[in-house]
Image 1 (spheres, rainbow, N blue to C red):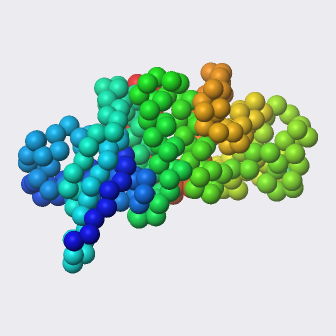
Image 2 (cartoon, protein in one colour):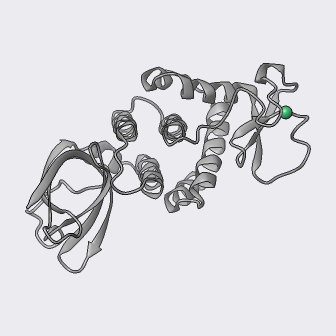
Image 3 (cartoon, rainbow, N blue to C red):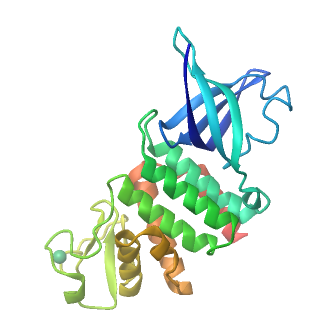
Amino acid sequence: MTGFSTPAILLRRIDLGDYDLIISFLTLLKGKISVVAKNAKKSRKRFSGLLDPFTALNLVCWIPRHGGMPILQEASMQAPFAGIRGDLVKTAYASYWAETIHGWLEEGRPQPGIYHLLHYALDALDQDMQAPEALSIIFQMRFASLTGFAPELKICGICGTFLDRMVGNHVIFDLAKGSIVCKGCSACESRYRLALSRGTVKQLAWIQEYDIEAAARIRFTKSSIREGLRAMESFVPYHLGRVPRSLKFLNDLRHW
Ligand SMILES: [Zn+2]
C-alpha cells in the first residue's frame, strides 16, 4: 500500500452513498485531487469539523493497490478560515474562486502557484485584509496569469498600438482576443467586448506585474472596483466556457 501526504484546501464535497464523501482538494504537491472520505458522513467523530469548505488541512491519503480514488486516512487542521463560512458575501466569493479552480484545473497536475494564490486570498478574506470585491479582482487576474491566459493590457492586440498612444478615456477590452484593442481596430461590434476606463486597465496591468502583497496594497476606487469586477467576471467565464453557478449566486446576492 502506498500513500502520500500534502497540504490541501477543500474545494468541493459530494455525497457517495449513505456514509462516504468524495472530496476535491487543491493540494500543494499533487494539484487538484479527489479522494474518498469513508464514513465521513455517518460518523461526526471521524473527521470532526475538518471537512468544511475552504479549510486548509494537512492530508494523509493511501492509494488502493488495485487502483481507484485515494482514500483519506487522516486530516489535521492548518487554517480553518472560519470567518469566511460565517459571512454570506465572503462565502459567495470563496465559492466562486473554488469553483473556478475546480473547473479549470486538470486532476493530478501540481500547480503550487495556484495553491499559494488561493491560500493567500482565503486568508486575506478571512482576516478582512482587503474588501472581498478587490480580492476577487486580484484573485482572478493572478489566476489568469498563472494558468497562461493573462490578458494583454498594454498594447492593442490587433495593431500593437501602445495604451498611452490610444485616444479617448475608454479602451475596448476584447474577451475573445484576451487583449485591449484601440479605437481604430474596434470598429465592429461584438458582445465579447466591453469598454473600460484607462485607469482600470492600468490597475489590472499592475496586478499582473507585481507580487501579490504589492497588488493587495492597491487602493481601488468604487468605479475601478465595479469595472474591474465586470471585466474579470466576463473574462474568466469566457475562458472557462461557462458561467460558474457560484458567480450567478454572487450576482443575485448583489442585486438583492
Ligand atoms: Zn489597434
